[in-house]
Length: 491
Image 1 (cartoon, rainbow, N blue to C red):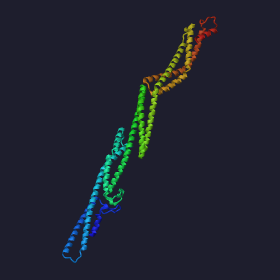
Image 2 (image 1 turned 30 degrees about the vertical axis):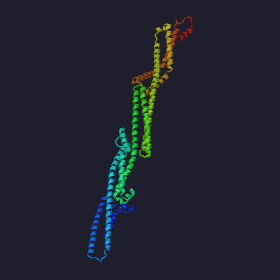
Image 3 (image 1 turned 45 degrees about the vertical axis):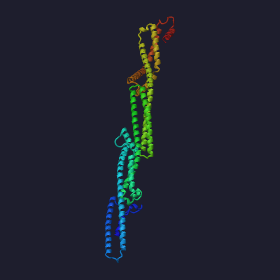
Image 4 (image 1 turned 135 degrees about the horizontal axis):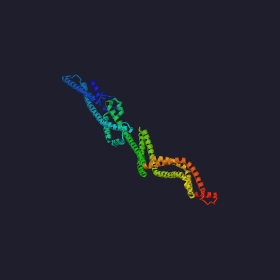
């Protein structure tokens, strides 16, 4: 019985009093349920030995009653008393150990239950963060601006309201602290490295994993909110720049269709000055600030976001430059058309006059002989012809210059037609007028020399005709005097 007691005492030893570095006892490496079963079996064995001891004590009393007066039973009685005391201590220790095991088992169940609820919240949060990450990286189905804004709203709501997660984490932590308070006071790492705590290794690992997930989740949530804000802002800028480009295209079409340029310019300045030029730079600034915050968080998105900000800035510069150019053109377009019209009008007038003179010179050169029989008529024809010829010569001197002017106007008209600013019919009319002028100029350029040559000869002929007419001056006037008088007459 003493040998059995020695062995049983090691089983029923209260491990709550073990020093930190103590070796594992028999029950420490077992699960709570198995340890309790084993302990109760020992209690049953203790009770059996307790009955056997009571039976031995009864037999000793019977022997003493039968007259064992000469036998010294004091040592045996002392041994029985000591054994009874040790059994009582063992029973009390077993009771306490059972209570401890039950408490440890209940505490472990509480931790696992709290962790189950906490892990459900962690899983839901991870799903939200994974969805946000896919949106940030552009993975999965393409999302429009409205969908991204909804994801951002969900992520912001999650980040701003952490009460549920905090409460579940606190419950799990409190339950875990209650559990480890029933064990020797060591760190979680030491628990995992000691066989004394083998029964709760899985729970300790689970708690440490949940704690790490929670801390990581909080960091990821902060990054996710910033990154989603960046993506949403980027999407808004993209939409705004597309809208601006489309507006420029429509304005160009309106100009080409001949709408009033001042009305188009007013609409243009209202949109690009107050809307685009104020909102987009502010959003670009937000993108840069978000990127700087992500740098502090050592986010993986920093490099990509910096490039995207640069691309949006460059695109914004291109759109604004295009808008400024269009606005400038619209401001000067009416004046350019007026200048073109003035030059074209002058060119048309010059061409018409030159063509008219060329035709009249040909007509006057075909005067009949009857018209040249009278000195007064011949002198009038000669003077009129000479005046037309001199005007033709004057205009013809600028033929090359006006041909160059017409070609320049043709280039200017090409630009103006591309920019619009007049109704299609008006622009077509100007194109037709300039084309007619160009054709006339090329024809005239080829005819000018011939007209001048024939005109000069005809002018001399008319001069001679007048001189020969005897009735122009008196017969007494010598021929040289008559020549100069007639010459001065039609000059």
